[in-house]
Amino acid sequence: MGRVCREAEEGVVSSCNNIRCTSFNNCNSIQCNSFTNCNNIRCNSFTNCSWWNVPCHIARAACVVAAVIALVACWVARAACIVAATIARAACFVARAACVVAAEVARIACIAAAAIARAACEVVNFVLDAIAFVVELILSIPLIGGIIRTILNWVTEIVWRIAGIFDFLASLAGIRLRKKMYFGVVVPPITPIATDADIQRQVDAVVDFYDQTCNINMIFTGICHTNVSPPDDGLTVRCDAGGFFDDWWLKGSYFEFASATCKYMDSFRRVIGLGAEIIVFIVQDVTPDNTNGCSFSSTHNWVVIEALPTDSAFVAAHEIGHACWLSHAEDTANLMNSITPAANPTLTNLQIALVRWSKHCVYI
Ligand SMILES: [Zn+2]
Image 1: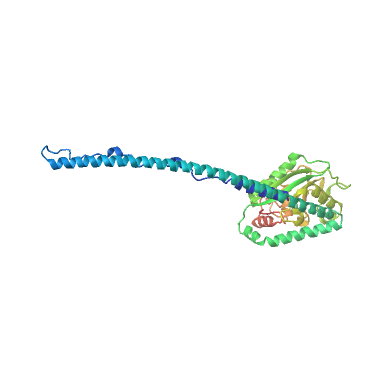
Image 2 (image 1 turned 90 degrees about the horizontal axis):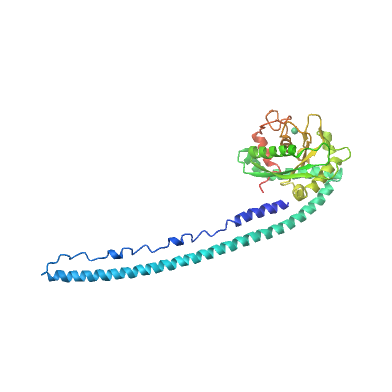
């Protein structure tokens, strides 16, 4: 659950970093652009008075005096304008500095508040995950824990599907906003051991396929090599009705316990179901022959795939499809064909809506 706190904090911090002072950027453009033509004020009239024309000479003198007075007034106004512009520019720079400081203080306060909120969130989630871990230990008790686990997982699946019915209808109608789903891999101490390259090939296919087909951000939480030893008869999973009941006994207990210890941080989500991580276990063998992966739909939060390399990179993607309520499809190009396509698989509109409707697939 801690990742919810981390993601929320990262979202808040990125918006904190948008706090900027965007005003007072044009202080330098405050200039006095008026009164630039004072020197053009001249008395250009009465230049041709005849020597005997006294009124003309009087008018000319008056004109020159008036022009000089206007010139002086213009220069005075120009000086006043420059002083005023300089003061305004200085005030603008002061305001700008204050604005920058205030924005920086607000940004730091915002980041600090996010960090404090995250710390509080982490504490709450640590407690929730610890409680859920105890619940998971109970769920790993053979038989009784297995039965409770099956009921709990189906009830949470159905509850969250009812809650998400309008989202399902929107997906069916083609409205598919970005959702996300978490998945991780657990490798038990078995032989043969799947290579990290083989696992990565399956992981890449899951991420790319669900991104491009369903607009789901598949967040890979990593490969956990658990030290918990599997039951004595190893990890061969029967992918039939018998396997369903095996799940209530030691194998199911093993998977539940290994999930609880390996993926502790997601314990609370797995108990309440919403946004629960899907865990891909690497096992020795899946029977019957020609089967290289298995999922019992909502019965648990894990699927299994064989350690041996396969032609198809889409085995994990196929099993995750089962975990999200997809059944087998006839179309050989469909991801859910029982013989998983080796390249470029597809899903139908209804299948896409069903996956997006799963409790594992969430907005936040
Ligand atoms: Zn299948």
